[in-house]
Length: 196
Image (cartoon, rainbow, N blue to C red):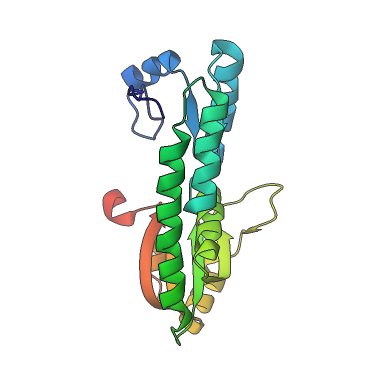
């Protein structure tokens, strides 16, 4: 954004240290990637005058909105010429993928099983690439949202066993279920191999 570097003061995760959380008050901006962090970001804006940006930086459209929102929320200057050049290059890559994928004769169906923000963001990005989203499901309960939530593991297992997919994006337990996906990638927790 600017020629100078903006340091990360803290990243809130399950393994954050007390010291890193204390540094959070020195931030000039909170970048919120998960809905669960909104209450603390709103509190920090109200009590500490630290603004926040809550966007999903997935795909060209999501990333553009994310970067523009940061520029609008802060006094940081966005070099629009460089940004436009980068976005144009990414759009070219997307078009190349779409052209190659257009003649692909196998299934183009994709399924996403993840947390709320990852599901919404990846769904939008895959649609930009021209992939068909057959199932986009939040794997934990979300109140007041219009995306599928709360289906049982049994229903998920039956779907994955029976449905041919080009791409499955999910948490590790879902990826371990028998499925017919050509490609399966972990995009959400839990990650059983680090827990067990």
